[in-house]
Each structure stands twice: as C-alpha cells, then as structure tokens.
Length: 403
Image 1 (cartoon, rainbow, N blue to C red):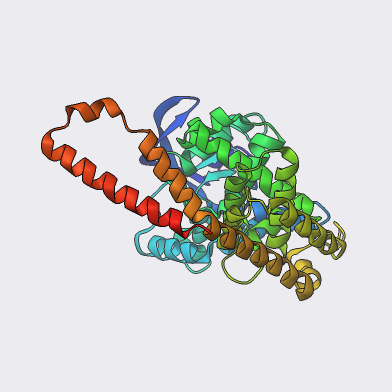
Image 2: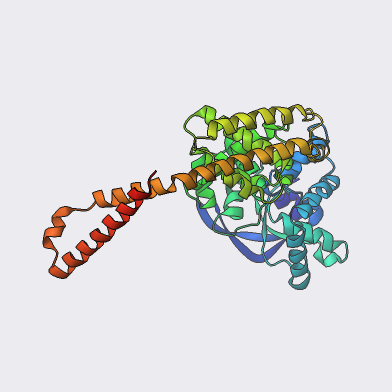
C-alpha cells in the first residue's frame, strides 16, 4: 500500500493547505500535510513510548510481537498500550481534539506507519467511534519505509519526540529501553548520533546508556532478561540512578559487582519507604571501614533470595510479588543489615568528627601566606593577635580534655 499513490487515487488521502517543518537528513523544509483515513494507518511498534509494553506482550506470547497481518487487531493491541502508558495524558488530548479538532499534524511513512502522533491517532480512533467527522488523521507523509530507512527514521523520531520541537512525557524506563535497543543491543545509532538528534550533550547520553546497561543487568540478575516491563513495574529508574552515583566510589570492579548485586537484591525485595532514598543511604557505608563486611553479609542474603527466584520462563512481575516479596524473612534481614551498618558508620563518623575538624583547622592554618602578615596595618595586626590568643586558648582546652 502506498499512501501517496493508492491513497490519493482511492480518495483515502486528501491534500490540505497546511505544511509542517521537519529536519530530515540534516535538511529543514516545509512538508505538505495530508488528511489520511484512519484505517489506512498503523502504529509504529518501534516507538520508544511503548517499548516496555511490547516486551510484556512478547513475554506473554512466546516471544512474538503483535502481528501486522491483521491490521485492525494489531492497532487494537498497540492502541491499548498507548492508553495504558499514560491514561491521563490521553484523556486530556482526546478532550482537546474533541473541542478544537487535531491542531498538530503527525508524521507517517508512505506505507502508513505512524512515527509521530501515536497518542493523537489513538484519540481520533476513539472519537471516530462516536462521530465520523474524526475519521481522518492529519500528517506529513514521508516517502520512506522503516525497512530501508530504519536509521534515518529513528533519528527523525528522536528529534521530534526529544529534540527541539517537543518534549514528551515518556516513562523514563521506556526511554532507557529505546536507548538500550538502539545504541547497546543493535548498534543502530552511536551515542553521538543520539545526542545530536535529541539536542542533549554527549555526557548526558553516555549517562543514560550506563543506566540502560544497569537496567539490563538488573533484569538478568532477577532471571528476567529483556523483560523490560518488569523494570517499569518495579519502578527501578531512580534507584538505579542512585546506584550509578555510588559505583563511582568503588575502587575495583569486584567492589562494583558486589555493590550492584546488593542494590539489585534490595530493589527486588523492596524495603518499606522510598527506595531511592534507601539506596542513597548506601553512600555512608561505601568507602567506610565497614564496606567489606557489609557487602559480604549482603552477598550471603542475596544468594538466599536468588534461590527463591522462579525460572526465566516463569518470571513476571506477578511472580515476584507472589514468590519473592512474600519472603519477608529475607526482606527484613536485608533491611536490618543495611540499618545495622548505617548505625555503625554513623557512630564512627560521630567519633571521628573532632579529629576531622582539627585536621581541617590545621589545613587552614598551614595555608596562610605569612608574607602577607608584614603588610597588615596596626588594627589588622591587633585583630590577628586577638584571634591567635583565642585559638591558643581553644587548643589548650582540647588538649586538657584528652585522656
């Protein structure tokens, strides 16, 4: 099917007077906007917004993706994902289109695949069931297919969704899945190409790639490789951000692996309260004299948790809730372990604080350029001597307090 040929000849595609500016292959120009009958279009299953939902569908259908052979059934499945990904945003967009019609044109490929405007398309599909006047989707038609222009289409999608034109409310895990698939797994894009398309710095993209790899490692750790919807359901993004910061404090790769496994198992068991704050507290233990003992204790508890995990074939969010998180004995033991070592480090920190303050004071005194003292006036010298007298008195009192 070809929208620009078959669609126009069969009056399923109508020309409008509208245009939309797009940057394709580095060239910015105004493209004509068409009105396209809804049943000539289909969702882009490569869209990052629904990446975790596609992974969930695959896990429930023996690894198969929704079948495009039955376009209406395919659209029903993907449309359901769009709704579930953000019901409130969809409700607002639907109400707006019902009141004012579609105001922002989408972007589609010549075969009908939508690469920008999936939410608007979903709203129009729902509204069309109530009123035929919503039976068309306004969009630019690019004369390309995803098979022979996959990289260019992806770059355009990123520019539209994350670049200068608009910022969308992706679930952060969905975005990580897109980064993992496009940069890490398939190598479709380089970090530099992704950064240029999303108007981000190379450093920001590099950080996201690191988070995406941590997400993949977490899923492999819990017997759920590539089941990205589990990462979404467990809301691991922000705890993994905290872990990424903690890993910089580790001195060796072995320390990093032990720390990752400790954080992974605590995320899996979900201690009470804010998980991100819980992981953030690890910074007080990492680098302390108790780090090695703490990670050893955590490693022993992690082995018991891993023994309770379902197999890869049986793993799901529900299985975690039913068979893993019901083991409150292990969850409580992990939580007590963290609390115990946090208490120890705080006691040590309190005990060492006077030493640290004296060391800091010594450093300040040693940094004084004594040559400047010769240039001080009488009032400044008087003030300096007075402060030194007070310092000597304070030093004498500290010395007298030593056992």
